[in-house]
Length: 124
Image (cartoon, rainbow, N blue to C red; front, top):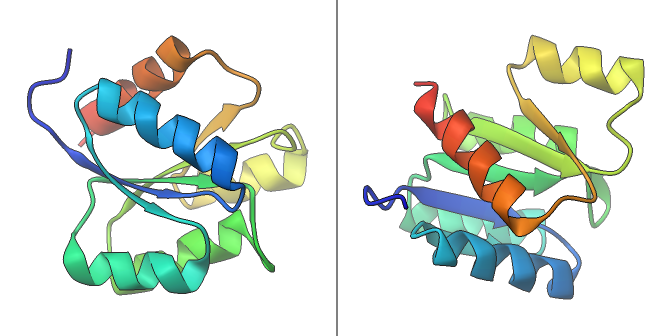
């Protein structure tokens, strides 16, 4: 189990999915700040400087990629884990690689999410 208690900003529009991801990460002993839209995520950045942004490929009226790029203007160097079901598109994969985003396809078990988060956070 993680004992450092790194912080993660979770930006997922779907409230049920967001809650499950939040609970999973908290069970993994991470501090979690959850947001359902970009505006709320920006507000959360005022309260914390997260170690990682866990974001879905689409958030409300903006792509997850666009939202992550915007949040990086507010928090330079923010590590990003993009999670979604449409990440097998070569164009999207190329964009993620250029921006050094980590990518994690759905569906996934909770243990796999925790393992991926730990891996991304270990790459400082």
